[in-house]
Length: 411
Image 1: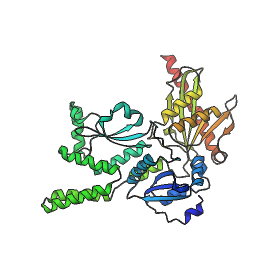
Image 2: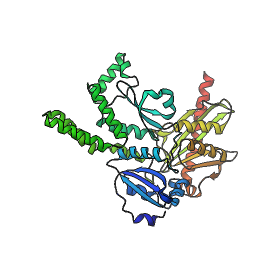
Image 3: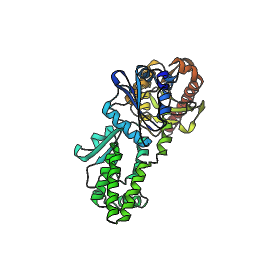
Image 4: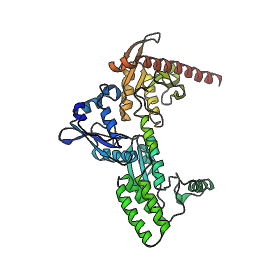
């Protein structure tokens, strides 16, 4: 599909979900957006391969048309996107139904159901099938999901304690429940019937059935008004208003975590340091807009190896880094080494269903850069920042390794 095909479409400047469709309207890719117009048009920039990936460039070329579904809020776009991807499993989406690192929303099958965020790898370990009442997901971004739940919690009060309410025996645990009630996080004293109704509405909301909830609340409001229970009628009216005017500015801001300002390119560089396999460490350094962001540098003590194996150490470091969903995702990853290290990084990214370009910096015997392996266009645009990121990662790794070695020798 070409940009000229897109310009004739009147895309709305509103939140929603977009679909890239191929031949016979086969769904190739599904995404969500704060502004459907801006997000869809961003796929037709000349440097889409560098900004996104070769895979996305191929998808756009293969697409025959784009369709959109507007939503009332970004929150509802996030939920709709998740449900549609789970249903249709589009070829070009970066999700995998077998990926164990993604987050799932679980509503427990208990006397007082709890709403829990659970990693896919822990879902089967922590819960028996009969212990799960409802299950939604997967959600690739734990940060977005948790921000979404903060908004949802203003609409539906629910419990999320680690310990079931029926097992809350310690004073500390009960104190936390009482405190969270006082600040409006947990329900006030309600009956099981009332709480079951809240859980039902929560389930409908995550199924994308907000209109069904509103219709039920409107009927309820009319019944209360007819019976002159005006306080209850006002409560129903307030909830209807809240559902119709969802405040999700936090999600709009959070989208910048992945879809950043194109001028603010985040580059993460990784390096491994050791002395013949001893005191092995790894590091991550960050360059944004050509400047080091030292507050976001990270150290990793290698835990899975006892012998020198730089590619395996890099795999461990990247895998551990990608579990931190609260850290911003980079637009470029730089590794110290050659094709082997580049391949390792790309395999780890694939395991996490992420498509981020990787650049390898090849060094000589004096550890001076002699060659860069990566996209030609990417190297031409960001060569200085890539080299700076690599130099910083080498310096930081050596410094951390020496620090670790000194501590061991002093012990």
